[in-house]
Length: 379
Image (tube, rainbow, N blue to C red; front, side, top):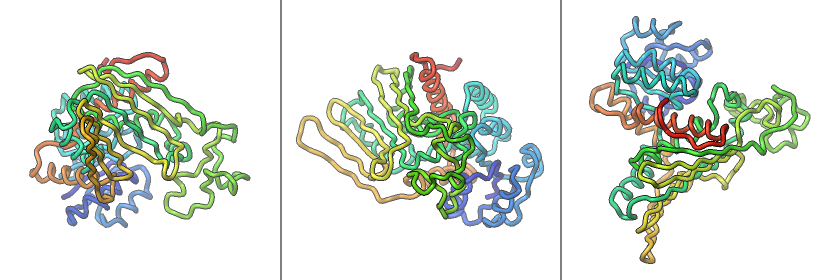
């Protein structure tokens, strides 16, 4: 397969090298659009020696014969780049969030409907993990009854990246609902099979704030040997991703947030995310409660438990430690390759669902700012 890449970011690079090339060793990056020359060399070093570098997406589409497109730019460019390629009718792998503003979301929705290109894989790996697939299978069987309440949580153990790296720029990210909750909202919507209609949300910033100078790097700080968040002495390849002081005046982003979501059938979901939990405090999963029983899972423990309400029975399902978003990256990659070679006709993570999750996140952010319930509707 010959793919075109727009933005050779760490996420897309990882999917290509750790997933796609394992499934298709002949896969090559045939065309690349990236404003950073260092990324051109990185693509060559990763095995795409003959990659052609283009100044514009339009030139790449016109001059190169491609089987698919991958978009791995910074978040604010996801919508503009997607709009450039949807009309090509090529399969597209689009990083999340699909939009970072309501204006972008509306433009993407319109462009998607006009282009009619349904071969889009949104990077939502959690919905296709083994653990979510089994949870949905059990719930759809009626074993716990109709789901009437969901309690979901995401306590992020690596949350300092959102305050010490480029993610600290809220203009770039659109806020942490769009960065993290977009995954969780998507898998919850997917499992429930019903639509959200109203959201109320609240955020707070209690930890990662302070009076340290804007732009201060850990390496330059006189407290870098005692600060528990110091990255001054990291030696790994991610050192630059956590370069800045998270107690400076310019950190940006909330450090916790919660949302209440009412669905069209009357039930509701409570969701909470936190960015200063660490180590074994990490948690990511949900409890789905029906009248007959409760199903819960946690991605970090790799287990599903089903508690029956009217008998003293607990069923436990355990999963091996699958890599790449708990195995979801492999399934997304398999789908993308299948869309390119024609063996798969429908995306396992379609753009309609990416747009719905983005809309829900944008409305949650608006609710947190205005203190109002927000309808999940296109304006």
